[in-house]
Length: 491
Image (cartoon, rainbow, N blue to C red; front, side, top):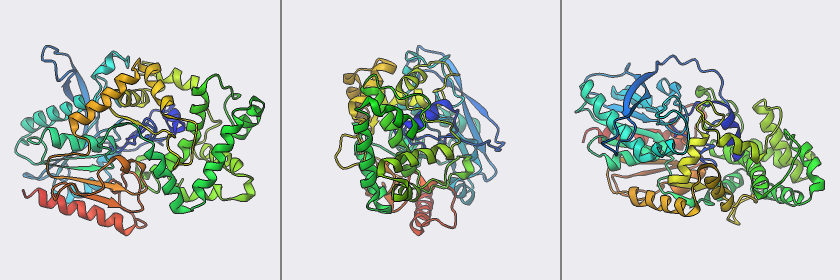
């Protein structure tokens, strides 16, 4: 559910095997980092099940197969009920979602059979022997949709569910897949709930950081200005090698700061910006049931640190935010070294440090989506990681040229239609604080393609379990989705 997976989050995510929600956000950069910094042990006992898939759905001469993981919750199901299919995203599928989440409340009320299908190349769903660039040519949204279609067809025939009404659920990148599943396979899926779904692909996505500015300002108008001052000060200090020892100490770096190229400084700056980016994206989302650590970090907390003059100038407060994040996640030091990141991201083993989803998702951004959250806009608080920094990674990690990337993103929009969606029975919930809403559907396309824009909420908020402190508009959005499902399942 991207997402996506700052680079700070991506770096940590590359080191730790992560559970993902069907709402990632993620991001390369927020969609790939859409990921999770760390999770605690998960006590869910839902059993793994396995489904035989073709490696290449679009080559009839290729008979190779592999096993795809899925989960089942049938405790609500009654004959004649619908089938709810949660779509996995760019990380390991988390079985906690088979026991928690708003979709299960809908399932209980509607006597639905609830299934969760893990995305190919993520989690334990390994179609190939490794993550070489050659093998990852079988990793794409089109192959993933074909996986969903084949799974729905075979499961329907095997379990007498062919005539049942199937509803797809997903958040972030899986929300886009839920949209496209209904769009491309309307005979197989009756309706979709596409939460926080970035349906428009774009190479450059500076709007992400513009929303970060507005979201910080909504807490305190001075907050993004203070962040901007801190970032600008750090950029100036990075131009002077004599300041490097002090910066190493200020941010508790794992090794002495050394800048060999523009990629080194860009990675360091993006890693620090990523702290704010991730907290904004998931601000106050109710993710505790997933075992996610750090859900107490909020925009209010970060802006409180930035406004605390007793900590020193804005630069010193910026360093205090980094230390707060490290303390929250029990990190001994901050690794802002691009060479280490590049080493991890080019490791092609399934046991590699980026095999939890980092290497795979960045590949998808380079070959399908872009989504690069650059600083190429004056209306955002950070600097130092322009589009070229992101694009160079495609060449360094996968030998994907800028021209190939641009053509691939154009083809994605041509194939799926971008914002120009022509189908029925899809609802698009988005949160105003979530930067991903900038690439989503936030106004009704038609009566059959309604949008629900939830003021004051972040990424995929409507998917998480309800709680007493939820904003009234969030509760209303969940109820609205339920009413739409009731109407659509009668059609």
